[in-house]
Image 1 (cartoon, chains in turn cyan, red):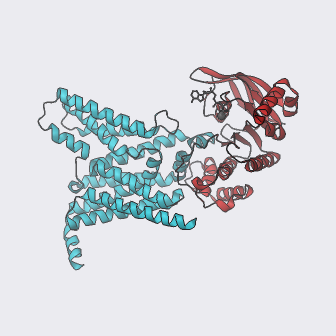
Image 2: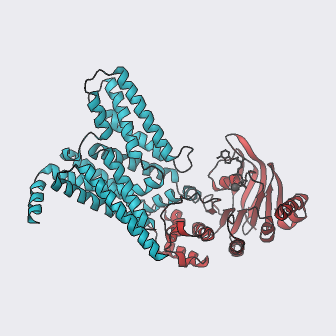
Image 3: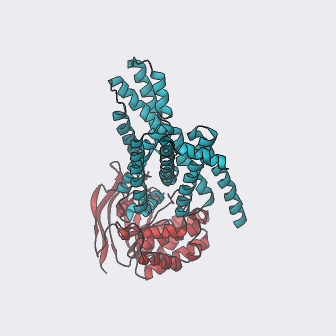
Amino acid sequence: MAEIFEKLQLYFSYPFVRYALIVGLLIALCSSLLGVTLVLKRFSFIGDGLSHVAFGAMAVAVVVGLTNTMIIIVPVTVIAAILLLRTGQNTKIKGDAAVAMISVGALAVGYLLINLFSKSANIAGDVCSTLFGSTSILTLKEQDVWLCIGISVLVIAVFIFFYHKIFSVTFDENFAKATGTNANVYNLLIAVVIALIIVLAMNLVGSLLISALVIFPALSAMRIFKSYFAVTVYSAVLSVCCALIGILVSILAGTPVGATIVSVDIAAFIISGITGSICGGARR
Amino acid sequence: MPEQIICKNLTLGYEGNAVAENLNFTVSSGDYLCILGENGSGKSTLIKALLGLKPQISGNIEWGDGCKANEIGYLPQQTVVQKDFPASVREIVRSGCLAKCGLRPFYNKEEKELAESTMQQLGIDGLARRCYRELSGGQQQRVLLARALCATRKILLLDEPVTGLDPKAQTDLYELIAKLNSNGITIIMVSHDIAAAVRYSSHVLHIGSKKQLFFGKSSDYIKSRVGQTFIKSEEVEGDG
Ligand SMILES: Nc1ncnc2c1ncn2[C@@H]1O[C@H](COP(=O)(O)OP(=O)(O)OP(=O)(O)O)[C@@H](O)[C@H]1O
Ligand SMILES: [Mg+2]
């Protein structure tokens, strides 16, 4: 035991480990808060979809000849996310189809552009890094951490302040509209917040991890709990715990961080599923 | 009786194609209006227009008697509500109070009490902690009715509220709605159940293909030719 603590102490004396822990936990918390809404609106795969959009945007940036590709990538992905999410339940193309459409489209166009115009030698590397998350969670800088803290505080504040409105608008948009709630404004607000956190997380921890962080805690909580409040609280707690365990294990065992967190989330999902079916069975 | 809704030459439709043309009717406070018509005649479209969810092509809807367009309770036709949404009955009923909150982030004591008393009134207080998606169709309708009642005490718009319920549950729901009406709430209900419609309602609006066939008192409707033929055709269908 003492050995483990010593090892952890050693690692936490490095700032990049501390940064990884802070950012990992904050992103786990924020994405789980929004996860329930995303899963119910059929947007589980939005993280992957947006990473393809980021790739398309990068292709355009490379072709135009920009050195700082982020100037194009970030706004384009945020706008794509808002356009996808802004539409409520009255759309003709539903969430999953819209995500699939935009992600496949961006991927194809991006690849085509690069193939036609680019002379850069390191194309393969660029492609890989935009698709699977350019930065690892272990290479964060101090300014990344502050940006992440700022956006997380904003997301949590918006979520708490508009909690009941978000519930009502996702549960039954037409009723909310009919009784005088401005559903369009709240849909847009939810879209902006989700877009911000997903694009941020995509750049900090990679798109693989963000998809897992959106889906697993929400689905685990929905296996056990029956009210929106309980589901929200449980998925937030579960997500933070899983991220913490995942980060610590990856430090101690030397495994890749993102994949370890996802594995812990999978384990939690299985345990929740079993608990849910036992409790549900006992009640009947 | 003060008039709450006045519709004049109202034409409704989608993408410029008229579905129902020239609707003229008035609803006064305390009325029980039943909207009849075949599938696709535009009943749900009319409800959406009254709720302000869908703009009309021409004509206008006037609101009187201190009613604003968003002061109406609404029970949708099919529950478009996501099937796997985790929500307890209490959370859903309370969400009816949302418009009263304005920008305040949480419900206050009065709103919570309103939700509790409405649940008692509809006999679903025992279900408060249950999950909505695990309830029976009739129980779900009561939950949505309670939510609508939290939103308003003036007008309720119900789009085929009894569809899919067993005969006993249907009668229960009709009685419940009649009781609410006798307490002074204006009811506007879409229905295919003509027998119940003429029994409970005070007024009937019958929409045919593209035009209004009848509007007036229920007692006059039974005597009218439209009413007679419609009632007969329904009876034949019922027998066969
Ligand atoms: N979203 C839409 N876009 C285009 N046309 C529509 C749309 N919704 C309904 N319609 C058309 O408008 C007409 C009226 O539809 P509406 O839903 O109002 O009928 P209804 O009287 O409520 O029928 P039912 O008894 O089946 O509920 C139908 O012909 C339908 O095809
Ligand atoms: Mg209808």
